[in-house]
Image 1 (cartoon, one colour):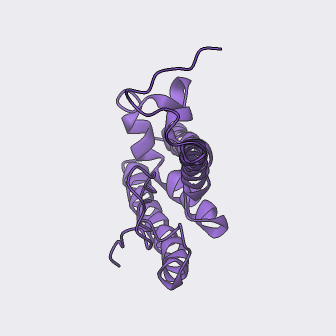
Image 2 (cartoon, helix red, strand yellow):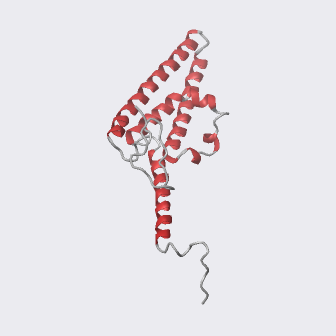
Image 3 (cartoon, helix red, strand yellow):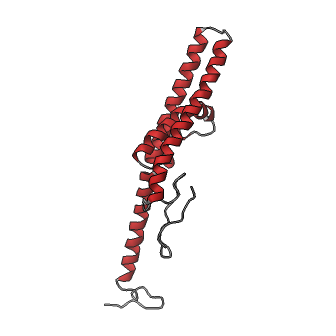
Length: 175
């Protein structure tokens, strides 16, 4: 699936929609390509979550086979569950509010990188659930795009009222 540029040519200075991963800018017009991707993305996220869960299961089975005791096995399963929950919460907030709105521990990328990797199953499941509602991150991008487009239209309409009023070299009239 290829990314397509914005469907309609935009005038000079008009805001451009930001592409979304797997969707490009097809989310603006919601054409046929968008609908196909809306079907493929949740399926892909669910398959990736299943593969990640299988890898984690192999890791847990390896620890279980080493006969280290039930406490260690329980601790490992609890750690994976907590990491998955934290990653799911972070991913959900990122997709609904935007990455720039993350604060505190959710904004940490480097220091909590291991948590996000171990909790990848939770992040993929959050991505799956969000992709059932919309293209993940579409609401944030659409709100930003519509806000920028409205501001651009306001600027353009303000200029079209009396274009010669602000012409350079024109002196102000005194009353």
